[in-house]
Length: 459
Image (cartoon, rainbow, N blue to C red; front, side):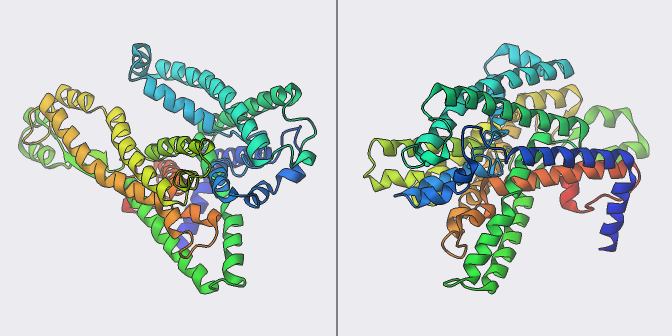
């Protein structure tokens, strides 16, 4: 504990790092304030209990669960009809689209190889595409709020203007687009002027903002009439810490492929040659190389089966796809995660380019021929380690459904036991710690976390 306090003092003593942390916290505060500003045409007093109102309607629990899942990424702004309701997710969607388009469009492939200038052009394309995504998502969001979750016929007092009118839709769409662009700007400023990873930090803040209220609700439920008492809260917290530890392990786990630089070994002799040949050099292939992207892809597609209920509302099997806690939803989610894990790993890990770079630099994998054989070897290793990574990712994805109703009583708190929320929090916190470690080590201080996990995350 004494060493940790000294580390905090070291962080505060570095003016550059201190200024970056202050800028980051200030921009986060602006983002959180903006998420509580409601759309001008909607009465916030009525929208505040949106989920409670909808759950009291017939069959509302499943759809409310989907809304809560979406709302978790915006810190409640989605369900509160805020000007920041779309949050940073349109920018994430645009980034994914640009990345996928880079596989088929030669112009984007050329930009990816042009270094800093190409990166700036790709960022500009992503910004413009973000506006397009917002223009598509904003009307759908307004339609969801005004027709499904806050119907005008039942909640007339929640609107200052008829939600079916042009005077409601046009200004609301413009405000939602502006709010999303503002969130994107805040994220980029945190990356440039703050401690980095601005977009990811905003998503993490939105998720963490719901943790205190979710925990209080769970505590109230467990200690109230019909609950299992404070001992169950302790068991839940301990189990949650174990889940976080496992999430950290899967986030930083790597398979190390040993490499040897033949040209360097032949260029030296005597003791130096022996030292070079005996040095530990490797290619770190992450077990979960795709991160949370398969989960995000899968959950995005899971809204499609839920739409089938509009064609047959009496079919209980199809209706299960609208409920994130049903077995139908989770079985399909696991299949999609495994498929997308292989797909995303294949498009993001360029094994052919890695093999060419090794050959060009005089490197080789022991007992494997340079060139195509090396690419095939790396591809085979990736295929083998992707399966356990995808399985672990699937387990984390369905864990909220497994714990809900067994010993976790509330839906809100169960979401923190796995899924995208937990993995994003763990990944962003590890990256942020690594950023702070870099500043401290550059100034000859001990790092914030001097552990094997912390050092491994830098590979």
